[in-house]
Amino acid sequence: MLPLSRERATTILTNSRRRPWTADGFGSSFNTAKIDAKMAERDLHFNDLRGTAATKFYIAGFTMREIAETLAWEEESVEKIIRRYVGRSASLKARIRKLEARG
Image 1: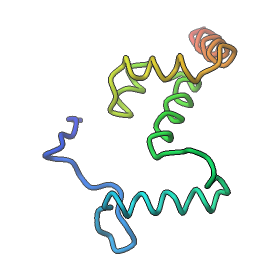
Image 2: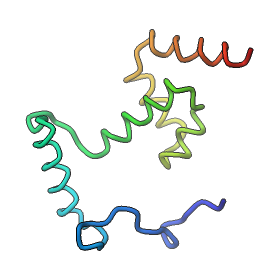
Image 3: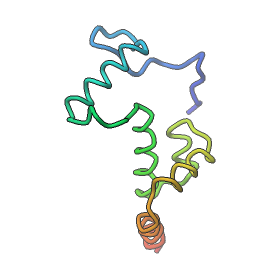
Image 4: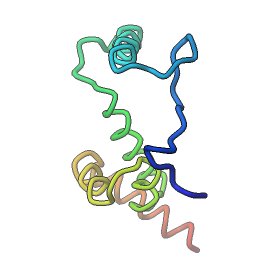
Protein backbone atom coordinates (compact mmCIF):
# COMPACT_ATOMS: atom_id res chain seq x y z
CA MET A 1 0.00 0.00 0.00
CA LEU A 2 1.35 3.44 -0.90
CA PRO A 3 1.52 6.06 1.87
CA LEU A 4 -0.95 8.89 1.45
CA SER A 5 0.51 12.30 0.79
CA ARG A 6 -1.22 15.51 1.80
CA GLU A 7 -2.13 16.07 -1.85
CA ARG A 8 -3.81 12.68 -2.10
CA ALA A 9 -5.14 12.34 1.45
CA THR A 10 -8.68 11.16 1.95
CA THR A 11 -10.88 12.93 4.47
CA ILE A 12 -11.37 10.56 7.37
CA LEU A 13 -13.13 12.61 10.05
CA THR A 14 -16.33 14.38 9.11
CA ASN A 15 -18.93 16.34 11.01
CA SER A 16 -22.63 15.52 11.31
CA ARG A 17 -23.23 17.08 7.89
CA ARG A 18 -20.62 14.75 6.34
CA ARG A 19 -18.27 17.66 5.69
CA PRO A 20 -14.60 17.75 6.73
CA TRP A 21 -14.06 19.19 10.19
CA THR A 22 -12.97 22.76 10.53
CA ALA A 23 -10.40 23.45 13.24
CA ASP A 24 -12.99 25.28 15.36
CA GLY A 25 -15.68 22.66 14.85
CA PHE A 26 -13.41 19.79 15.77
CA GLY A 27 -12.07 21.65 18.80
CA SER A 28 -15.62 22.35 20.00
CA SER A 29 -16.60 18.71 19.60
CA PHE A 30 -13.45 17.56 21.41
CA ASN A 31 -14.26 19.92 24.30
CA THR A 32 -17.84 18.63 24.40
CA ALA A 33 -16.50 15.08 24.61
CA LYS A 34 -14.23 16.12 27.50
CA ILE A 35 -17.22 17.61 29.33
CA ASP A 36 -19.29 14.49 28.71
CA ALA A 37 -16.44 12.37 30.08
CA LYS A 38 -16.28 14.62 33.16
CA MET A 39 -12.73 15.65 32.23
CA ALA A 40 -13.37 19.30 31.34
CA GLU A 41 -11.00 20.57 34.03
CA ARG A 42 -8.07 18.54 32.71
CA ASP A 43 -5.57 20.11 30.32
CA LEU A 44 -6.09 17.59 27.52
CA HIS A 45 -5.68 18.13 23.81
CA PHE A 46 -6.48 15.98 20.79
CA ASN A 47 -2.78 15.22 20.29
CA ASP A 48 -2.76 13.65 23.75
CA LEU A 49 -4.80 10.83 22.20
CA ARG A 50 -1.93 10.10 19.81
CA GLY A 51 0.50 9.96 22.72
CA THR A 52 -1.80 7.60 24.58
CA ALA A 53 -2.11 5.45 21.47
CA ALA A 54 1.69 5.37 21.13
CA THR A 55 2.13 4.13 24.69
CA LYS A 56 -0.65 1.54 24.33
CA PHE A 57 0.83 0.29 21.05
CA TYR A 58 4.27 0.01 22.66
CA ILE A 59 2.95 -1.96 25.62
CA ALA A 60 1.06 -4.20 23.17
CA GLY A 61 4.36 -5.06 21.48
CA PHE A 62 4.49 -2.75 18.44
CA THR A 63 7.99 -1.77 17.36
CA MET A 64 9.00 1.89 17.37
CA ARG A 65 8.88 1.84 13.55
CA GLU A 66 5.36 0.35 13.51
CA ILE A 67 4.14 2.98 15.95
CA ALA A 68 5.79 5.78 13.97
CA GLU A 69 4.24 4.58 10.71
CA THR A 70 0.81 4.16 12.28
CA LEU A 71 0.81 7.64 13.81
CA ALA A 72 2.70 9.37 10.97
CA TRP A 73 5.49 10.39 13.36
CA GLU A 74 9.26 10.08 13.22
CA GLU A 75 10.70 7.19 15.24
CA GLU A 76 12.61 9.70 17.40
CA SER A 77 9.30 11.32 18.41
CA VAL A 78 7.87 7.93 19.37
CA GLU A 79 10.95 7.09 21.43
CA LYS A 80 10.67 10.40 23.26
CA ILE A 81 7.00 9.77 24.09
CA ILE A 82 7.73 6.22 25.26
CA ARG A 83 10.62 7.34 27.49
CA ARG A 84 8.47 10.05 29.00
CA TYR A 85 5.20 8.22 29.56
CA VAL A 86 5.77 4.48 29.76
CA GLY A 87 6.83 3.42 33.22
CA ARG A 88 9.82 1.14 33.60
CA SER A 89 7.73 -1.74 34.89
CA ALA A 90 5.30 -1.51 31.96
CA SER A 91 8.20 -1.31 29.53
CA LEU A 92 9.86 -4.34 31.11
CA LYS A 93 6.61 -6.34 31.04
CA ALA A 94 6.18 -5.51 27.35
CA ARG A 95 9.69 -6.75 26.58
CA ILE A 96 9.16 -9.95 28.57
CA ARG A 97 5.93 -10.66 26.66
CA LYS A 98 7.79 -10.09 23.41
CA LEU A 99 10.54 -12.52 24.42
CA GLU A 100 8.01 -15.13 25.52
CA ALA A 101 6.16 -14.82 22.22
CA ARG A 102 9.36 -15.56 20.31
CA GLY A 103 9.51 -18.89 22.01
